[in-house]
Length: 394
Image (cartoon, rainbow, N blue to C red; front, side):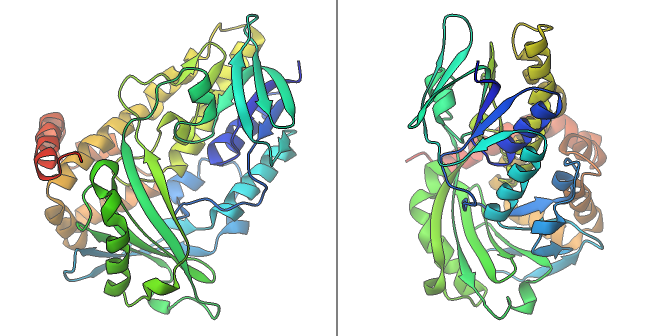
């Protein structure tokens, strides 16, 4: 056997899974198709609750610290809110992902970049063969961290991710430093695209600008929306570099994410926050959650990786379901919710506590009132019907 475990994909989910599994004593081979460091379409925001999942600081790759938010609904009046202390860290995926891989290597992970995986097959003896352009590797466990509809899930018969959101983003460079009005804050614009929002995030020498929305209705509207966003904030859309689109996969209820000796983590499992579109938190959380199940499987204490699914059902999937319900309600009529974010201290403080990891979606729905929690499911269903009428597929 070449390795105990092969992890395909070295983003935050894959590198975290590899690091945690190796820390328990297993031999881990981590493969990625790209040469590192490599860039990745992503806003690059790491919330405080996300950073606190890691047993080390990400300070070496942080380019801006966010304590404030500029909030606007469409072309309306902008309100800036102060979080009082850190809400999020801004980084670049090319730096963050390379940093996380280095931490995995420190735990003994064998990392090989430039390795395009072309096939994954489960052998009659229950082991796996992972084929790259350079050869075939064998392992007792394989973890798919290779994104939505990646090769691991595809070859092993996992459900394809049929729906989600799409985003379009790029960078505007400011070699002398980004404008002061964008530093230390996130700039968010809501209501222009169904199922999403626009953003401006400050990095060390550039602004990341982007828009996103529901895949089924937003695709053709992304470029006009991005140009509109730039005009709204006094930015020149012609200066955008590295313009890229990407899919934000949303897990469907009942999707299989583990079977026998294989599992999917992060985007490959559709683990993106439906309300915010943020995926790094779930990537790290799923990478951590899969490790104990792999340890038990390798030790013969479990016959499958079902423990991973059970862990997510306890710790992450209720959050995803509540976020999806809140998203359906919010997108049916975003203006009142943004007004509350702008003007209600209770609402704003709840949002700040959420991104800091001091509360959860489930707990927040209770905090905002038992009637709201009781009505969450029915109200979300109404919201989904309203959204479907306003934005029919196609």
